[in-house]
Image 1 (tube, rainbow, N blue to C red):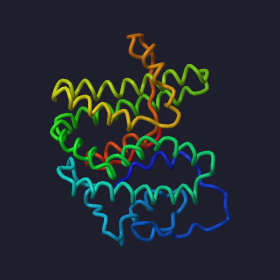
Image 2 (spheres, one colour):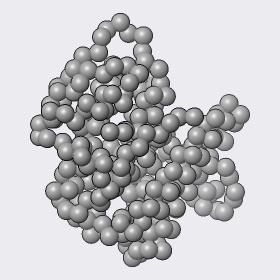
Image 3 (cartoon, helix red, strand yellow):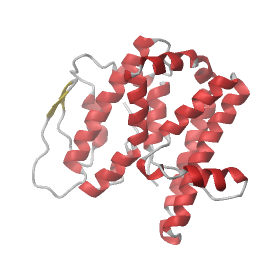
Image 4 (tube, rainbow, N blue to C red):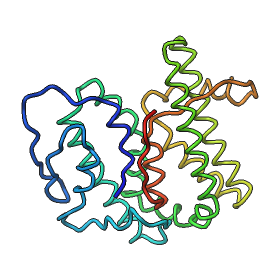
Length: 252
């Protein structure tokens, strides 16, 4: 099993002398993490869960087709997040843990809708055909987003905070537009709008809550700006939502 674990491997283990321990989550015992080896923890994450989380879904390319499929995806996501959180609590210092938690904010909000809101579930299933059509395009949009992020983050010391924040916002705008335009071309207008809504939820973290005005005044004006992406968690959530096979992203 491969899990996109880069977002945790970016941060070194803490120097705590306390040995990590197992924990009990909603889906059973969470294995004790080995700091620096989140991949190993994620490999063990889905064993002996109650109710059983079908880890085989990690290997499949399958858009949820019905409420049962959505429920299975929600179990997968929630169990995975429990294990990731346990790793963060034991192996990552408070400052870096906050960075990850901010980045996953949008994905958590999306899954709150998808897993708890029946009307949102019905709307999602109503547009499932569009998800099928746009699947390869969305994957490309996400990969481009992450590649730009890697390039931009390497230049962190070369820009002021305000300039880089503007680039971040425009990258999010570009990601959403990439998904939206693909859906416009292949789907009904209302489906394109819904997929854009999903992309916006996925690309939102607490750092981006002030982006709207920048997007309206600068990003959508046609001005050419180098852009970047938000956290690598975006790809994880797209993958889990859409049923893409998970691959490990190597930090460069």
